[in-house]
Every structure is written in structure tokens, then in C-alpha cells.
Length: 285
Ligand code: C2E
Ligand code: MG
Ligand code: MG
Ligand code: MG
Image 1 (spheres, rainbow, N blue to C red):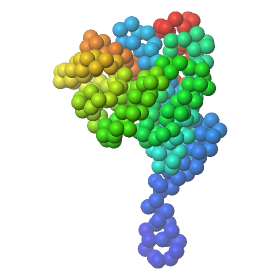
Image 2: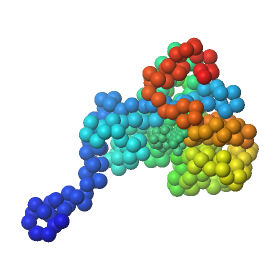
Image 3: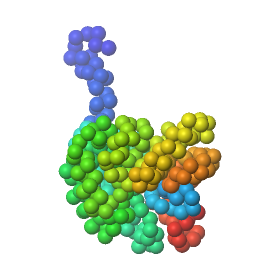
Image 4: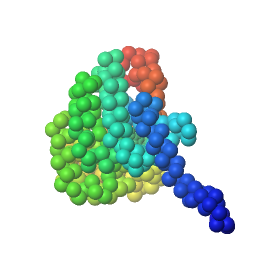
């Protein structure tokens, strides 16, 4: 590219090199405005009791249609927020929005419904999490027990005394804590002994192999037994076919989530599911 040493070609060359960074910078600028003006959206994916098909909770999942770049993958969105110092504001927006939405559903009759909210590791380790949770619960007049936080493992989750303190503080508040994507990160069974998670979410990669691989079945059986002995509820994510759901139910997996049962959906579609044909009686399907 930079075949001549003219200023222009050097500039173009540099522009090309930095394109991903430029995209992120532009996204960050737009994201900051989007958080401020509620241009983000949460979709909700149902989580069912695998035994009785009752709706237990909904997982709030970020959706963003950027004016400049179109639909942004939530993982990229989170990454941009992290890199540009927007993670605390984004997290606050998600918590407030999810809690207020759940309050509306409670008032409309879905009184037992819970909401799961994803928390990135940086937020989990920061000092704003507890105050923001208090604020979100108060602003929606919600019981803490209606909120489940999903935390993805990362290397530092395990080795800081701070993690234990935060978990215990959250426990004291009364919110539930789930370890998300279990089995993909740095989990070691022995860590679970020290950190008081209420729930464990089996990563989709385990579920994918379930119907074809007897070793995956053994592994899941063992994880469920371990979780039970530690008083943790197991949720399977990414259930796509009936065979997986049947197997998981036979193995004693408590909760399940996946395209087979329901995809993440916008608020109006969720309301149709909750209140559409029948009034909400804890079993909408
Ligand atoms: P996650 O927390 O593990 O969420 C589950 C992801 O699996 C979601 O992807 C969901 O749409 C997808 N999924 C659920 N069932 C199925 C299935 O049967 N098949 C397949 N192929 N996929 C399924 P999504 O919505 O793209 O979110 C990706 C990740 O982005 C989430 O993974 C979570 O780590 C992160 N994320 C989303 N919203 C937030 C948020 O508000 N805050 C934070 N910190 N992270 C978020
Ligand atoms: Mg999650
Ligand atoms: Mg997950
Ligand atoms: Mg996952």
C-alpha cells in the first residue's frame, strides 16, 4: 500500500491497519449515547424446569442495532464497553431495565418469575456491583430472590479473596448467583468447594455432544451429582433437540434453556407467551 512516501498513502496505510480499532472507537461513541438514550434492547429467553415444564426464569440478553454498523453481536458489544470504560454504565442499564421489566411482569400476574442477568468479570470484581444491584432492586420494588446473576468464569475469578467477599455479600443481599458457561473456562471441581454459587450452567458444548457421545453423558452425570452434593441447581443451556432434553431430564438436570423450547425474544413476544392464551399460572406452555 504505502508505496510512496507521500503523506496521503501513509495515512491510508495506517487507516487500514487500525480499522478494527477505528470500528471499536466509533462503536464506543455510539454506545455511550445509546446507553444514555435507551437505544439498547433486552431480549428474554425462558428457562424451564425440565421435569414439569414450568417457566422458572428468563435470561436477559443484550441486543443492539447500531445506526452505523447494524446489528452488533452482544459479545462484541461487551468487549467494546470493557475497552472503553463503559462497562459499569452498561451493566447498570441492563440491571435497571431487567428489574423494571420483571416488576411489570410480576404486577401483570407472573409473580413467581425470576430474571437472570449476565455480569462480566470486570463488573463482578469492581466496586459498583453491590450498590447498582441495590439501586435496581429498590427502583423496581423487587425481592432480591427474584434476581439471578450469571457470572462467567475467568482466570481471576478463582484466585482472588475478593471474589469470595463479593459472593458472600451478594448472598447476604439475597440474590442468587450462577456460574455461567461451566466447563469452558478454568473451572476445577475443587474451586466449587470454596465459592458459594447457587447455580451452575452447563455450557452448550456439553449439550451438543450429549446424544452422540456416551462420555459426555458420563461427564454430565458426574457434574450433576457433584452439584447436588454442593446444593447447586444445574441448568443446561443450548438444548436444541428433544433427545437432549429427554436425556438431561433422565440425568436429573434441573433446569433447561434452548432453541428447542424457546429462543430469546423481545418483550412483546415474551408477553404473548406469558399472558397471551392463558393467564399466567406458572406454566405458560
Ligand atoms: P450466555 O450468557 O451463555 O447466553 C446464552 C447464549 O446462547 C445466548 O447468545 C443465547 O441466545 C444462546 N442460545 C440459547 N439457546 C441456544 C440454543 O439452543 N442454540 C444456540 N445455538 N444458541 C443458544 P447471545 O444472546 O448471542 O449472547 C451471547 C453472550 O453474550 C452471552 O452468553 C453472554 O455471555 C453475553 N451477554 C449477552 N447479554 C449480556 C449482558 O447483558 N451483559 C453481559 N455482561 N454479557 C451479556
Ligand atoms: Mg448467561
Ligand atoms: Mg451461558
Ligand atoms: Mg454460553
